[in-house]
Image (cartoon, rainbow, N blue to C red; front, side):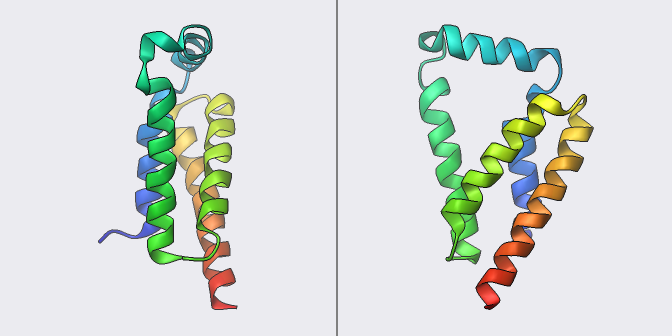
Length: 110
């Protein structure tokens, strides 16, 4: 199995990274103003993604998985609005994932 770090970076790139740039603001406006057009995509999919990320983290680090998954979700959302390119999104998300995974590993060793 691939390392957790790599799987998380790839997951966030597919989930959020593809919406970097002009499309990001258009998608956000669509979701906020007309969520019924997207049906489960606007409500169910984010919850399913969060559950999958939490489960992946829990499989390797039982302590703190929910907190880390939530922090990563918030971090990725912030990077999405701040990054100019998908490459920048991936680079900055990789740093965030590295920090969180290192913290989890340290916390679980204690």
